[in-house]
Amino acid sequence: MKSVLNKQWNLKKFDERLSRSIKQIHDISESLSNLLSIRGIKPDQVSEFFNPKIKNILPDPFLLQDMNKAVDHVINAIENNKKITIFADYDVDGATSASILKRFFNNIGYELDIYIPDRILEGYGPNTEALLNLKNSGVDLVITVDCGTVSFKPLEEAKKAGLEIIVIDHHLGVVEKPDAIAIINPNLLEETFEHKNLCAAGVVFLFVVAINKKLRERNFYTNKKEPNLIELLDLVALGTVCDVMPLTGLNRAFVTLGLKILKQRKNLGLKQISDLVAFNSEPNVYSLGFIFGPRINAGGRVGKSNLGARILSSEDEFEVKEIATQLEMFNQQRKDIEAQVLDEAVSQLEKNNNNFSTKDPIIFVQSNNWHQGVIGIVASRLKDLYNKPVAVISIDDKTNKGKASCRSINGIDFGAEILKARLQGLLIEGGGHAMAGGFSVKANKIAELHNFFCKNLKNKVDEILSNNINEFEVELDLAQLNIDLLKEFSKLEPFGVGNAKPKFCLRNVQKITANLVGKNHEHINCIFSTKTLLGFSQQIQGTAFRAKETKIGEILLSSSINKKMHLIGTVNINNWMGSEKMQIIIDDIILI
Image (cartoon, rainbow, N blue to C red; front, side, top):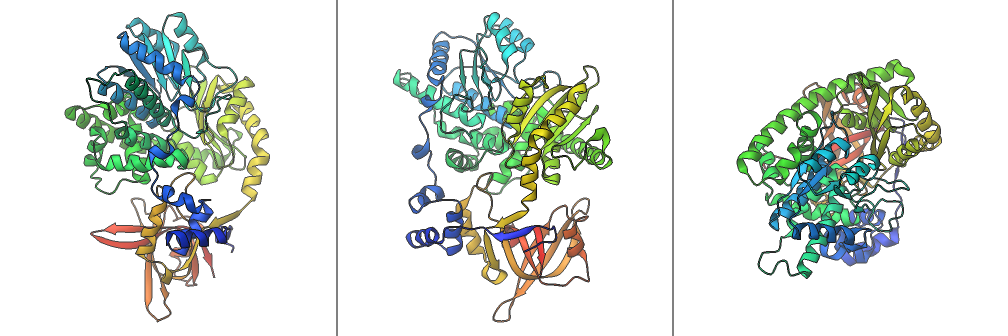
């Protein structure tokens, strides 16, 4: 079925025998059993999929290389009362990772500090000056989290100065490893650990589990209460979702249980953010990614880089209220700056500035005045807009160096390409994972770097884009859709990367009304209707976001187009004033 966006839409294929077996054994609807079949879930895995339990899936953390060495070293530091500092990245994954460690150490009666570098002045990851300053201030051991895997020079200089370093990270590594006491990273090239898709917060949680186990074996808790590590999973869930990790396997268990912990409002910082923005709904992946995440990130983007880690680790009510207010203000500033940079970036591409175009297989944009704190979000917006890998580069006038944030599409491992460019000498530094990364580059090397990426990835990007066949998982008439069915589908949650929300094809509906809504009148709200077999009219509300100037908007807002249509999108239960109503978020339209 060809759509108004010129896409081919088909029902996703699945194993019908497997679906029937799941339906019979678990007494669920055919639609839900089909969705489980599509996800490759076997009948004996359904119960665990619906209700994942950490105890059933948590791996032995000591299977990670250097875990035993790192744990022994930290316990020795505790026993000898050495001064430990956590060095974390300034994003949500870094803030949650640092907070998990600080909360754990506080619970066992050991105080440590957190150091977050300034995004603008220091950049990503350990830097020599900061590490030497920590050493001079009396720090004996630094634990880097969500950074450090490719920080060769800073870690070498730190070792010369007598500072001990343990690296806990998840970013892709190269053949060499920096000189450190231990490096715990499931994505080191020679690492055989099964769970490659953990964010840093997930790896840090395994580190805490390992320390706790060894302390228990050493009778550390004979005269004190052992910490409840499960209560840290709200932070693991937040880091996992905001770092866009696949919600499968262990990550699915982390997020499922983490949302239950978040609902208990035990973390003062997250509780205060909820109260400040009047968030009273059931926590879900959306709230992690679009309510809590942006505010935790806001300090590192346009304010003070340590605010996110502080609010997540603090037990001081006055402090968290003060920080929450600051983060809310910074988040609004971030939105304003982001909108301006996005407009400029789109304008550049439309005008082919710097010889960069939307026709390029890899989208590059650059400017000398863009705020480094928002280029990652802008890269994500451009990736969604053009469906291509994107690098947004902000150039420093004084140093003539550019710092970039990158976002990728499914099928293109941008982190691996950044490492290749680094090995080719095109970058000052850089790294990342499949879907996101960053790099620093000399301004006069940007064009060469763009050519390098385009040459390496053109065929792969062309192949992905030429395959314009898209799939939906559920095909229903509006009369077959109801609240109970949608509630049954909620058993598949949490939805996210690797476990996407089911895509619907809602057949044979007719538009009744359509209105522009939103602050800038860019979204479209509609009412659609269909006749049931008994002649009754059933309706559903639909929303097409940012659709005003699109082909979809042209059709929905036209008074002359009254054809029946199929709607492609995701279907939600919209709770408003105690009333539950169905709503479809429209991605595409097929005119009949």
